[in-house]
Image 1: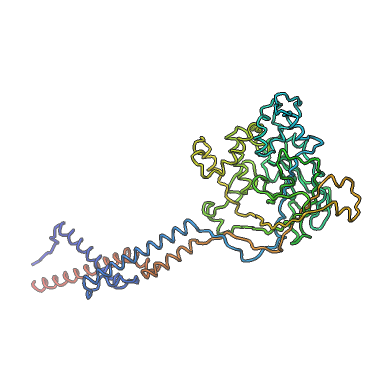
Image 2: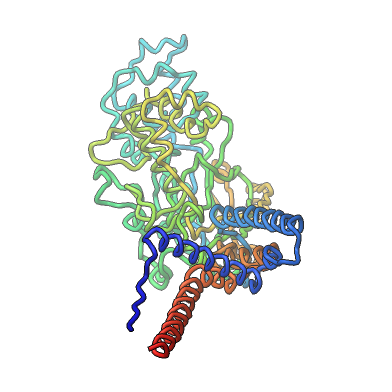
Length: 553
């Protein structure tokens, strides 16, 4: 007799059995995880001896811990994402001889000598005694000269002489060349230079520079080819003169010059001369003397932005304390939005090769003036096809500069088509490596006449001019550098997250890997183990039945 056994279960029964099997595996994995997990509180979720109320209490506590931990991790992420950079002091001091000596630009308040153009006399002659300029008999050349010099005058002059811009003259595109022909020569402004306790001719070191104050003179500036993109600039004139190489001192040093040390002996001393008959109070007002600006050698000077007043017949001592900020490599890896500064290769300027905040702002005000007025100021960088603003556009140029400062008048800016976008595109953040100078200024009056009389110095016509002296030097031989560095990097963020997870829940990297293990590997292992056990039991049953059948036979 032969018996055969075949599976009789239906497909529905098989699916139900498979579902129960998966559920049993999940339940077993969960119980095993709860009993062996390294995360705090999880072991109480499935203990048989715990009541439902106790398990519910532990679940609530665990969820509250998760929420608190999540909130703290989110705050840590916001800190990491929004403020990862800190500006702190460097670990070491920096000696002053490792930095460049600052560039110095000097602009005399007297714009033209009376021998070339007596500005006040010509203006009074132009207006006449009754103030009626319609009967003026000045020739066209004088009118052009008056208009050119008037572009350097203050708001009071522009308001009192509103008629001058509308007097017919020749083209005003040649303002710079007219000012160059009329301006004081460097020999008339600067008598003597002493740098690093070395007497030298100022003609070799004072470079003629075009600014909004007219023709000024700069010491220790980089060349025009190094500052500007010459292929973009117009070809009507140069903005700066080249350095002369006529002295042995200039042959042995590179430009820009570096500081030699601290103290007056290693600094710069200038003797300035002001002829009394050249002084003019109509154009620039009641303040006479000079305007001086300290700036980086690769920065084009903007006198109207900030300057130091140098009065006539005074000795002014300016002690410098550099404020240098650099950027570490760890901070350089971040985007400019997060570190809030630009490297030279990150921010392209149309007219300047070197990026710094002042060059960027000058280019921005140039673009804004062109958009508002259809022309630019004579001292601004421009292309060949860009026009120079005539005198009647003076108020438009003034308004263009003031618009950048109108943070409280947003509605007016928005009313101007395209201006708001132009201003937002300026984006003139500081350079990632920059130097500024804190100054300590002391001054005292000079009585040149009594000095000459007491020492019996044979100087001709000493009563016809004033003498002013300027001393510029580093106050200390070492200074503390500031540095942008990474405050909160990825490693710090992960460490903070790990600390919070450990504080609230006792979680570590191994705890997370443990969860992954119980979700992925452990269920398959249990299923495989059950399958092997099931097959083994089936084989044992079949063997037993076979033995029984054989015995019956």
